Image (cartoon, rainbow, N blue to C red; front, side):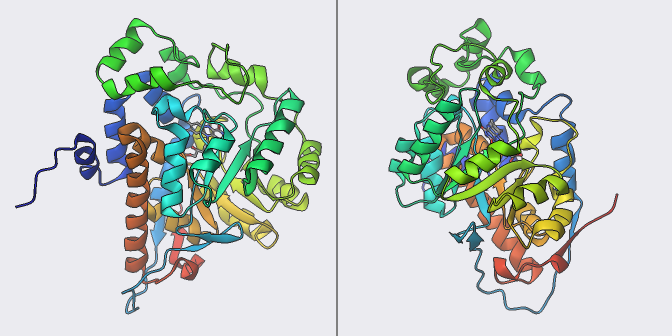
Length: 388
Ligand code: FNR
């Protein structure tokens, strides 16, 4: 007989076999407005659905009679080894999802040997995130603000704290219209209403957030109380151009990544300006709805600029097989946002571990079934996009 598991969190995680299972567990344990902030997308949420369908339309082409008794999932991502071709994407207000917040995510990424990108809209300061995993690979994501001095100060803090790369996000001149947030009346910080109280009653662990969350610590806007769209409108600079990228390139000595590129032409422009990598991303469908689907754009971008700069991809990655597809079609790695946040909402730091563990196990299994023994052996011949 196995000893019964009395730890409720471990029991919950033992029942989570896929990212979708973690999503369901997260929904049960988080107030509706917070869950919807993570789970939702912009306008009619068409873009995120298309991204998922693109992954579903991938066909694998396995080879048989290969020795796959040992597989090596590791690969180089942005000039250093990563245990998987996977990066935890920047997400704002992470302590709103669970009181362990960014520290939990950074620790889980460090344990798994993969990079973590801290968001400008993070709720833990960059120095503390570095200090919790000093030898881990961490990148800092930047939004350029109207208050350019504050942005410069943030870049300097990131450099001093030892962040290995700067990730400039360029798809957010204004906030996307996330209808679920509008309907739920989500504000930052969340307002206490009868509805939020009722939500919290069904997920007592979330109460801790009220005691610990200090959103917007970076933003020096501690008195802010409004919607995410209002916040973006107030702080973000919609006049950012290629000149700003040039300025940043001259200022940041480390690796520079541009996230949110959505066309071959812009990929070319960013590569010519000296970025080491680009992330093909439509922000998880949270900005421009019906934007190009990153996976479908990937082969053309790889053809155009793959020799000059590294290409990562995100939006809609939910399985280890999706990671293989991204890799086969030419990305060096994929980023995930919601999958690790579902884990975090379901069970804090252990939940993030579980999300990475699920993806890693699916990845290794798919690799073996494909007949490849290492990430570096995955090639274009292993996958194709079925035409619809
Ligand atoms: C994000 N994303 C994001 N991106 C960014 O550059 N800065 C940020 O602060 C945020 N904040 C944020 C919050 C939440 C709740 C989500 C879900 C996403 C976008 C993120 O980095 C990534 O591009 C997407 O999450 C990828 O899509 P999936 O994996 O969520 O489908």
